[in-house]
Image (tube, rainbow, N blue to C red; front, side, top):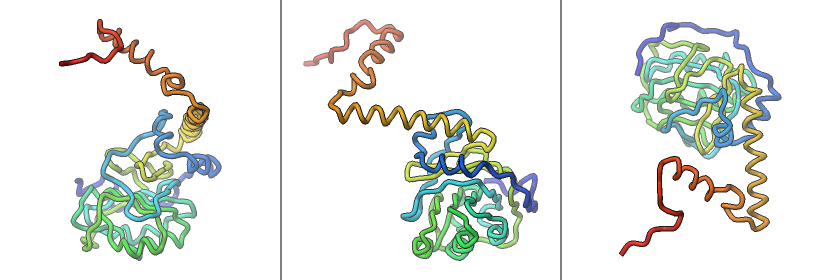
Length: 241
């Protein structure tokens, strides 16, 4: 939980955003397939999840670092959001002081923001639910902290152990959160789409009556791994008295 940032008090407005067409393609893919695709993708650590029923988030990051529990720069953040953006708040994981509520969530939404992901606490869940604004966070707490700073906008931040830079693409759903580096977005999309096509083929085969081994070759894989480990027994399940 860091109380300082090397770029504290910075408010950067010049953010290079990725190709909207690529962002739209990524939005059609679940976080699981994006993670399985690998490449320039980072998976945010567990603990950050959806706080309201609206869960689908995908867009370029407007990043915000705040001294844990401080909302001074959160209050400024809507001014920097463009349509399609996601606000990413590095609140140091603090859970006893909310850094985002329904008032600022409403302003982010009015500016065209498509969601917020917070490494910290949020509040006013009923109001955010009424907005239909997707918010992912570590938890909820009714009280806010300070408005004294420091903070910074559009600087590198941490989100669940993952570095996020302004303009990186954040994708969140019920399964979790992934971050795609802006420069690697095309590669990540192509990799994830290959995973999606492969899974579609699997499901079609299952629907046609194929078994798991027929589709996935799991028996051969187990035998290969067992042989590599020096196992001598057969594939049969050993009976025990």
